[in-house]
Image (spheres, helix red, strand yellow):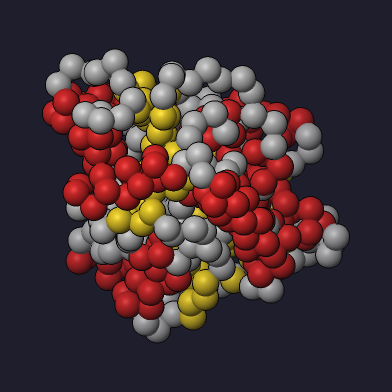
Length: 356
């Protein structure tokens, strides 16, 4: 194995590879063409989740993958082993984890460390923030959107920071499976973090518009299921017949392509994969006006003032009224073409390669 290889330390153990892993695999192919090998390190909890399935599949395909240990001593040994055996010169950090950041600094502190911020950043508490500033001081900080980079520049003004907008593996979305949605207008929202994703706002808006429309709301819950159920109970009581919770689906295009309107009432975002993916699948998009959404290269015709239910209802009603119009079909086709141009994997890989 040649010198100058890359390690991705990822605090990621989702049930499916999703767009995140697909992006890293695309980067791996580009780096191999340059004679650079890529190594992956996932958290210890990956052994206890469905992530183990796709990790084992990737290992069988020949990818170099490690899973962290639970003890401090064993983890130090593992980090040192990876550094030595794989001649690591560049480390990418994805999704912050305090303990892992300390290990990264201890073992790889003199290597090039490129830290991706996938969400808007705000300090959790002052002592930890001061430690992070020290640990991150030599790192290159990457925001996945301009909104995220703005926060990085605010809290880490002495670091080099850049924006590399996320990319989408659109091929994942080209083979939707059969899905029978309920009669009437179907809306879809994400609910894996109900407060952040604004699931309560989606429920309130659809509940209000039920008075004059036949609407069914689907909420996808990859995690935080009990929290979502509590949110539904708090907003509308017993789960109504116009609301269905959907399980996670690796073929997410099945949901996007078989529902009419995608609702994105998020209170905060780093970069909304879902909005871009739904746009590619030609859903109408009703979205909040948070900075990360404003920066997206998507159709913002139905953008509403964040947390303003009245404005949300107005924009959603307009989207419903215009759904079957010729102009709406044209707008959605144009929006799909725009996201293909703006968020392709090749562009992302080239920008990341320039950081190494």
